[in-house]
Amino acid sequence: MIASILPTYSRAPLTFVSGEGSWLTEADGRRFLDLGAGIAVNALGHAHPALVEALSGQANALWHVSNLYNIPAQQQLADALVDKTFADTVFFTNSGTEACELAIKMARKYWYDKEQPARTEIITFSGSFHGRSSAGIAAAGSEKMTKGFGPLLPGFTHLEFGDHDALQAAVSDTTAAIMVEPVQGEGGIRPLPDACLKGLRDLCDQHGILMILDEVQCGMGRTGKLFAHEWAGITPDIMMVAKGIGGGFPLGAVLATENAASGMTTGTHGSTYGGNPLACAVGAKVMEIVSDDAFLAEVNRKAGLMRQKLEGVVAAHSDVFEAVRGSGLMLGLKCKAANTDVVNAGFAEGVLTVPAADNVVRLLPALNIPDEDIGLAAQRLDAAASHVMGANA
Ligand SMILES: Cc1ncc(COP(=O)(O)O)c(C=O)c1O
Image 1 (cartoon, rainbow, N blue to C red):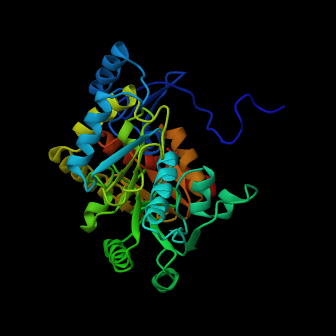
Image 2 (cartoon, rainbow, N blue to C red):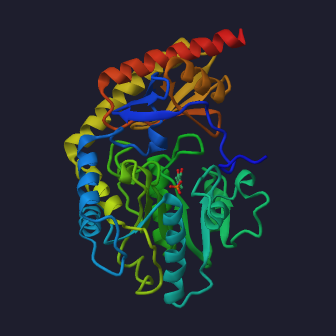
């Protein structure tokens, strides 16, 4: 008999009932150090007092009004995003997938309105992940995500990550946009080198192509800048954001320049819940905290500390791990042992990590993880690696 929850997830036998900071408490009272943070969602940890206050304040005032009316928290968050980024305008969604849908629509509508309706092709890269909608899976294109779900939305050209020649050859007068994650998350914490991101920007400029960045996982302070592309000194035309922006409340956004957004006029797009007052009240507070320079400086310091500790763990367990990689607090342990064995051994040691493609264990802790918890994380990962080694001996 099918489970009452559609069985698309393989779940660990853990049931968390409460959370505080970087810690989750299981129904039986055990405490776990959370290095997954809801897969880069709980950017400020669990039950951050300022977020609880923002949410409960809004909950007491007004839960929902439609986008037929002004929503002050939405305006506040949009103004803050426009103020701190390349963007001139923002549309709010409930998730990264919905942000992907709009990013694609926006790019195609741009060219349609520029009287180049054949310009619909979007170039994407192997290992990418843009969500599980029909457009999202067609964009990523991997067999794992698309098999059985055809016919797929047409208009995507999939290239090998890092194949510059293929990229030059793929660009044509039907190319509408290039869509890329500055740091691939699901693909195994694979940062695109700054020089490549710059090269992509140059290529887009040369051919008048729109650059869409998917910062759903790597954005909102995760890499130590508010958005990951800032490290390369470039700006996109369109950017997808989600996960960390809501700090645990479902929220996403598409940010765009005025030019890129020019096709999206009244009536061309919408969302019932996108930009809901509760989500935006929390999002505005997350943005206020995370976009602060002193906060980001702390993220970078903590990232340095964490990386240093992880290098030690990897060196001590060279039969389990190959290397540490990533950017800021978006880190991956490339494994020699099966990554799922490491994640499972972590459960026994009270530390939560997340597997990713390319046999990587992902570490995406709260951006404000205390230093002592970073030390504990290394200790527990070290113990977990010893289990893996022991089990494989
Ligand atoms: C880079 C990237 N894009 C898009 C998505 C889809 O976001 P959501 O699950 O919020 O729909 C994800 C989710 O993991 C992601 O990592």
